[in-house]
Image (tube, rainbow, N blue to C red; front, side):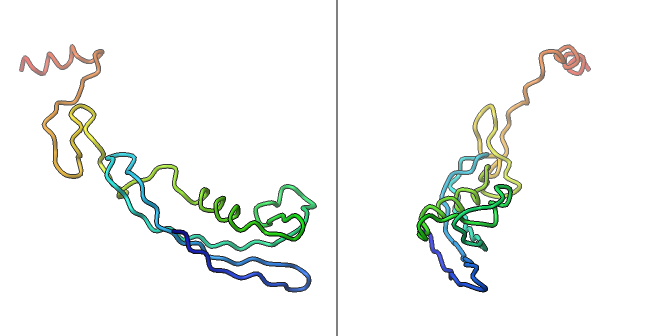
Length: 129
């Protein structure tokens, strides 16, 4: 559920939008595949205009047609932009073992790390000692 609280107000013939969006996001950690629940909150401070004079400044403005603001589209866009590209259960998540699939946050596995085939001759020297 997404909660939106805000206000529209006019000051010196300029219409402003100040809003706060908050929601819980449920997903899977990109490293260990555990379920993740994160709280997000976004603050929006925009100016409502009917057209832009300079296309480079569109970050601070919302262009409306026929004086109608599509709040659902605005919220969907802001939420999409706020979501992280990589969702982690915690910042120092160790992920899964590439060989056995053990969650390294829970327990350590006994797998030997794969050796680059180009370095296998050096590994044989260590085994002889």
